[in-house]
Amino acid sequence: MDLTQGTQKQKNERARKMMLWFGIISLLMGFAGWTSAFIVSSSREDWLTDFSLPAAFYYSTAVIILSSLTYILARKSVKKEDQKSATAWLVGTLVLGIVFIVLQFAGFSEIIAQGYYFTGPTSNITMSYIFLIAAVHILHVVAGIISLLVVLYQQMKGKYHPDDMLGIDLGATFWHFLDLLWVYLVLFFYFF
Image 1 (cartoon, helix red, strand yellow):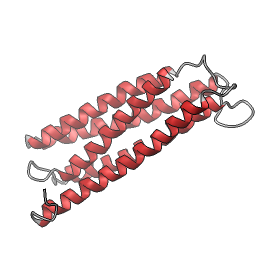
Image 2: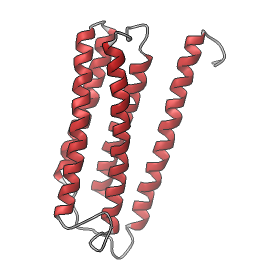
Image 3: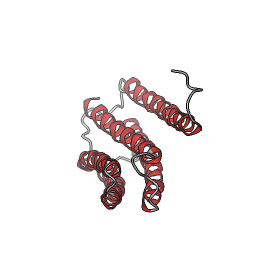
Image 4: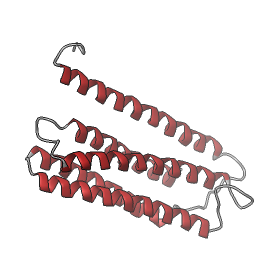
C-alpha cells in the first residue's frame, strides 16, 4: 500500500492513526520496562510474597471493562446516526472513567490502611512498584478522559457521522488500550 496515495483527508487520517499507534507502542514499552523491573526485583530478600491486591483494584477492572463496552456502543450509535444514544453512551463512558479513578484511589487507601506507603520508613519495594505502576496508569486514564471530553464535545456539536468518525475512532482506540493495559497489569500483579 502506497501511503502517499489517496485524498488529503485519507492521508491525514492515516497520519493521525499512525501517530496514535506510535504513542501506544511507546507507552507499552514503558510499562513493559516497569513490569520487567518488578519481576527482576522480586528476587530481593525484602520482597513481599504474602500481599493481596486491594479489592478496589478488582472492582475498578470491572468498571474499566464496562467503560470500553459503552465506548463501543457510542461508536455503533454514531454509525447508525443515533446521535442522542451516542452522546449518552459517551457520557456513560466518562462517568465510568471517573469511577475507575476513584476506585484506584480507594485501592491506594486500602494499601495504606495495611501500613504500606509509597516511600518512607514503612515503604516496601513491592508496594512502591505497585503504587508507581498504578499511578502512572491513572495519569494515562486522565489523558484518556481529556480525549473523551474532546470527543464528547465534538459529538454534541454533531461532528461525527458514518462518513467522519476519525475523532471517535482515535479516542476509542486509546481508551480500549488503557482498558487492556489495566487488565494486563491486574493479571500481572495477581500472578507475580
